[in-house]
Structures are given as C-alpha cells and as structure tokens.
Image (spheres, rainbow, N blue to C red):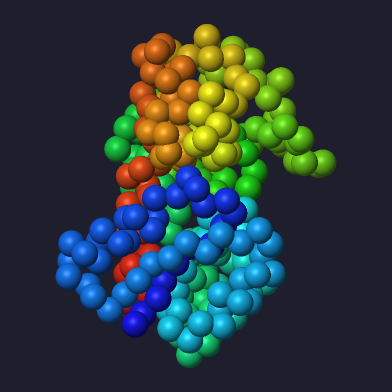
Length: 244
C-alpha cells in the first residue's frame, strides 16, 4: 500500500483527505491511501516519516517553512521562496516542491485584467511566498500587508492601507487564515468601502467558499475568487510529482 497525507495543525479546515479519497475511488486506485497528520509540533513529523509505506505528503499551515529542515533536496522554486507544500519520498530521501505556485497562477489568471497591475498581499507566511513568486513572474508590483511589519522591509501595516492605497492596488490577495472555518466572521481589517468593480479579491481560503473578505468585496461589485480551484490544481500537481 502506498500512503500519502497532509501535515499541519489544525487540519479541521482541510479538504485534501476528502479530495484524494474520492479521487482514488473515482479512478479505481486501490493501492493508495491519504491521511491527515495533525501535528501540534513539527518535531512530531519524525514519527510520520517512520512509516515505510509513506511515499509523499502535502504541507499546510503552519509548517510550509519549518518543514525545510527535513528536506534532502529542494526544487528551484522551494529554494527561491523558502516555502514547501509538497514532498516526495524516494528511498528515504525527501525532495521538496511547491505546487501552490502552479495552482495559484492558473487560478489567478482566469480573472486577471490589465489594470490589475498593483497588488496587496495580506500576510507574510509560507503561502504568501508562493503568491509573491507568481506575482513577480507576472510582472505585478506588490506590497506585503501585515500586523507587524518586518524591520527594514517595505511592508505596510493594515492601518496604512487607506482608500488612496486601494485606488492604486486593485488586486488584493488574502494569504492569512482570517475568515477560515470555524472563525467565519473574521476578515482582514481593510477599508472595504473603497472597493469598486475594478478590484479583484482572491482568498486562498476555500472553507467557507465565501469568506467575509470575499463577501464584502462582492457586495461592492469586485471580482472574487476563493482557493478551491487552486486546491484542486495544486493537488493534481502533487499527484504528478509523487508518480513521476
């Protein structure tokens, strides 16, 4: 039996196990299983890796950067951005990949317009690194927004995001867990009244399908997209990596 799974903490929000279980059933794959490994501490990964049938796993909040210490090899994207969400195991060696960049780019560009040339990236975690890498590839200028701007960086605080800032930055990407189930009435603190139909709000969260962040934008005519399609695209990319 080939085993795959997801590490992170907590995992109550994740659809990955359901997605892969249904995929295996739908495609008649009978020699694979996919499990959730809810790890309160990254050090508990050692126990997961002791399973000789484990062939690979995905990584979610909060371990996309912490897992780098366990890798024997990194692909070029992981080396560049310092975040990993997909690991292939071959003869005991762990190789890290980032399939978030594939899923995010393919999902983002469906609604991208020429005037979406400036962006705000909400959050500075591992998922934000994948988003930033894609924006650089697409030539979109971005600024990171965080509660605690990093010393010496160009980060903005949420208090600095004014209506004037939103008039320029018409693409806003939420990489934070704000609004994720079960805390569905939370959202990043922004001047939402300044949003217009020219804005494009992308939320990496997919549970719930419409976060408060997206609902506020949608109410003012903004284009909105959640992370569900990104999840599917990155999951299928992971499957390709594990079976290449």
